Length: 282
Image 1 (tube, rainbow, N blue to C red):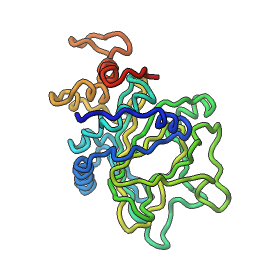
Image 2 (cartoon, helix red, strand yellow):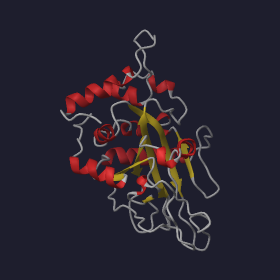
Image 3 (cartoon, rainbow, N blue to C red):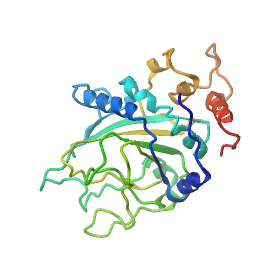
Image 4 (cartoon, rainbow, N blue to C red):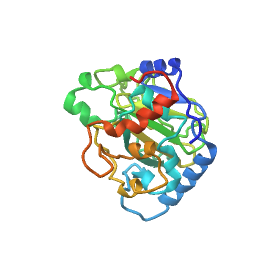
């Protein structure tokens, strides 16, 4: 693992204020290249397990870190992981890893992002339904890796900064598809965006003539259920370190398999953080 990049107080304050944060050059070019090639390979297969398609032309896979080794470096990305720990705690794991492919929209054939179906949403909608928006805290953070080069009308994810504090939905004016204040972050090819579960967002309109590829990695507290199917084969691999194993879902267990104290499974990230910085976690 390369040297981790600890977040600055200004970065943490920006995330608290906006509900999102851009990390510059947080994806190594060689990792991006391998992940892009792996995404193209997967999408060209007839594999059904984990496939995630929709009527609007979207294609992709859930649990993509278990489908190709090219995605494994994203699990504990040293340019991202310290910010996740600082914003949540060491007691986290990977909830989902989602490959998303969105085709370019042909002229005159738009069926998505129309006023009647604008697409703006929050993640973990069942949590809001159960607890109510006013009682839903920050539970998880997504890391958005865009594998398609940025450019005009590429359709990168849009956000409403500060919308994580709203107790109701964003307001989209009649006849429009975006609420006031919506932005598309200005990203370079190796930049990534972090955003939390309460931040309102929507996929942009891809009119670039190219397919938009992205991988969304969502991390949350270990007492939250993982969204992806269990990846038992990954945890048996000898080439993973303890931090990666925690993030991939190791439970609170002793070496002999017996049940350990609740929360003890977060010890790898706790020790890692303490060696990284003297700053306390939240």
